[in-house]
Image (cartoon, rainbow, N blue to C red; front, side, top):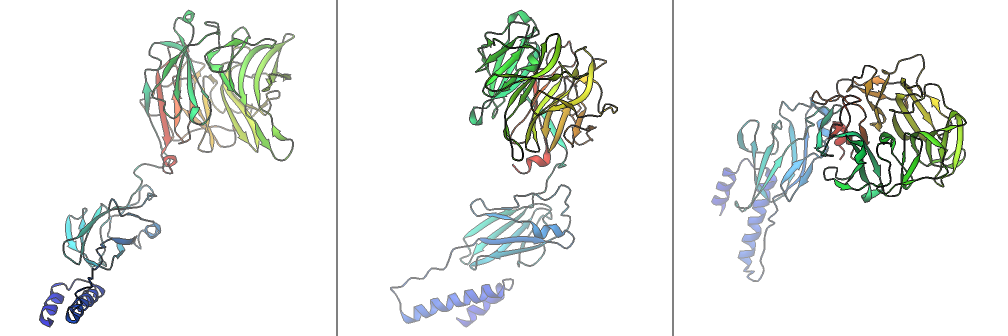
Length: 476
């Protein structure tokens, strides 16, 4: 028995001392049991050959020691859920510390980067520039468990924005105007895409898709709207209904986006500017009421006016010089516990292009945010505005020369100053410059651009583009 034990120890000199002690103890226990003649008691050693803990470190890569690795015992994968920063280099061996189940007999390691296979002593450094495979073998020499360990590193520039066509062919036929409105809540939140065919006398088309989808669209019927008269770009969802204004100043309402009716006893509406959502003001007046902001004509003058959810109207101040009535981009947002509405660029009452940004809290009084003496961006119409990445994001429209731009402008101070985005957040070369796109950002930080036109007279591009800044996807 002693001779056999010595031979065993000599053949397995690469094992850690505690493994040898465990084996000897096991043998002694079995021998003692046999000597005592305990025929009615059975002893079975554990068949656990798992890796119980795992960590990496390297003095040249100090952040590596802070990486938390997940051990998936079912699939046999070891990985870090939170990827290391883009550009991290694992171009040298690192110290790998593992805790093995006490009954693991051997640990064999296969390093893909080097292309070798070794019996690992759990101390030598390993090359993790590519995945490493661990094969643990139990004391019986037959039972094994395999793990594939890898270090996840972000493979894209975190601050760059990746774009691509998400869907094409909606609507299928050529259209001259298009507007997408988001309506509903939760699982019932949907895109409503309104389109005016090239032949305006055909009336309006409507397509709907769940916001959670955006690829599958259902065509719906539209009734009650006067063909060729609606300012399609100004259709607005407010409270529990849709609102649309015509070139003649009539206001229409729909509870479902399909069946529309003319609203009675309303002023002559020259522009439907957008909705101001309700918000809590914790310092002054409590709950801020919502409002539908408009410009109306009264006694030969243009004035601001708002309609509340009870359909009651309140007049505001006279229209500011240079304030846009058509072709503007708008955005409902919150700032300092107050709900606000922003309008940017567009054409004023004299049909002149503008390049200013305006804001209101109630739709009755508006303030110019941009400096009259400055030039934040070219005079243009058909811009698309949204909140994104904690700033205002504006995709340029069509300028005085009738040329569309794909420039992106960012405002970090609530619309006061605007700067062209750098080379990381830009539209890709294959994107056709356009104006009059509808824009929306979903809960996963994807930005969607619907339609748009290359010139004021061209047909709508029947495309839906989707983009996201890479680092905003890391958390999902």
